[in-house]
Image (tube, rainbow, N blue to C red; front, side, top):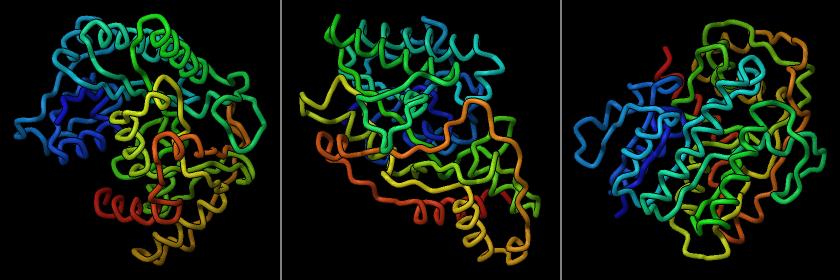
Length: 322
């Protein structure tokens, strides 16, 4: 069993990774400043001797150095997400996503960590119109957030070439599932829509609803992190992978699925209308990933397509949001 540091472990993806790796018998250290994560996401682990929580900030080098002591692997999830947030406040996004990331690379390298697996982003594809998205063909970034995530990839590549430090980047595509926060100004679309429908309020779709995304259920993301962390294939390290399903769903189709599953709990939701607003700045029209590289080099096989993931997510929200 390994000792794993999960930065941002109190967040949506980080807390799911924490729960999974503890269940597998690993030791898990979480580093989080609770800027966007929640203590209740980790409270079930308080009595677990294999769990350690460090309240700290990746922008503070001393916190990073403390967190990596004795660690075998780092799963770096800590970041300030959201394109709109980065447009409103590019400086803080850069401090966390770039300076914080560099701190973690340096600390992990100096502590002798075996490998750092980090959350990259599909936003790196920028203005490239090619579909499906293939890892070695990207465009120009369309937001400060996208720039920060691309810089992460550049730093990781340099650390591999210059210091021989192993990294793997996972370009997440619209991840959703249990514990994804529906509250706040920068809530993701699926939990936000679910919350609106459960309150019999009309969700707002940006644009006509024809924009499409490769929505990716959390269990697929957990699988990719585990495979990236443990792979012994030398060809599979020091590179990036799309972390997705390889299928796309329009926002209008998404609304249809959510209504279908939610009306099983509350038939009145079927009558809730949808409001269409303007397109959101920095958004790309369509996103679809090729996952062939991950299948070939990591043995990745998605376990949940959009309908299966949404059905599980809706059940979780219904049992935990009311």
